[in-house]
Image 1: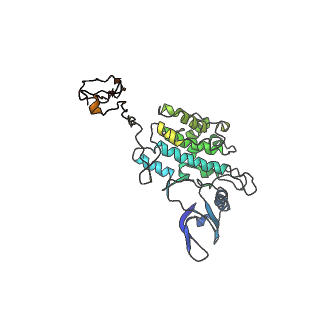
Image 2: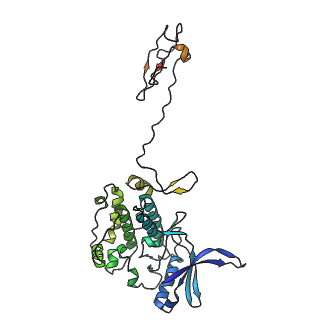
Image 3: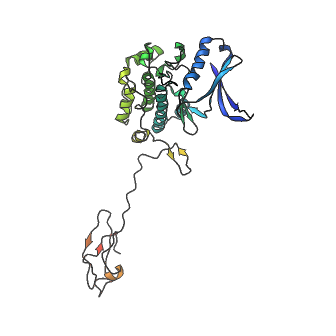
Length: 356
């Protein structure tokens, strides 16, 4: 439908500005009024969302009857590419990283759902194609929601072709399959599907063909994640199943409550925890081992109540890791303290495994 170029904005003084991404509609599609309208609707909807987790639209227009969209340049990969790279090596993306990505993406969705126009009217934006392909993870770890090409807004006129969703039906909500009017809770259903895929390593609704998958989505009876992995936290399972509810009224009312807590649940589950900061200041994707025991607290040597030096007072000290114990001094005539007396009545403690 479109192709993306690397470009630079030309400033008024003739110098080049920062690099941007230019999305250009293919020439043979410019004659189709419906496709051109849908292409421009993407820019009109996205430019009204101001949030760090949503891609920014810088400009849009026409050059020689060919529409284009200029947006911020994103360097990195889609979340789908990251999952595919991990699957090729026989692994899954660590749970902590997945939760962090989904949390920030849900924040971007929540900003889109709450967006208003210049007059304060709600735009009622619904992404309708919230999938791993449309979540971008930059090389610095920033997460952006992209591609509002088939998004729906109550303030922006224009329809969506039903065939646009082909190939992404795994993330469609039951009301979308039934042809009912959808709202922001359809995006939360798609977020629940992605969370289920991470927890179980499989999709919540599967089948031998497309029709069977759509029927199972319409039934809305996914198996519990703990049936596949008993180590899944129950609270995280509740979040997942709530987002996958067949009835939209039983889902979360907004994207913000559906955002999981990656640090807590990423560490308590069987998968890896979120990235940790290294000495150089960068973030490392290799988490610390969850089974590594914490070193015991260091005990300090208690001070003796003896007023004389140890070698002259006749003390003996010995240590036990279980307890401290005091005993009466040897008194006059003891070893090393012969002929001397100590002012303390109990002046030695059990300090080490050997007599000093």
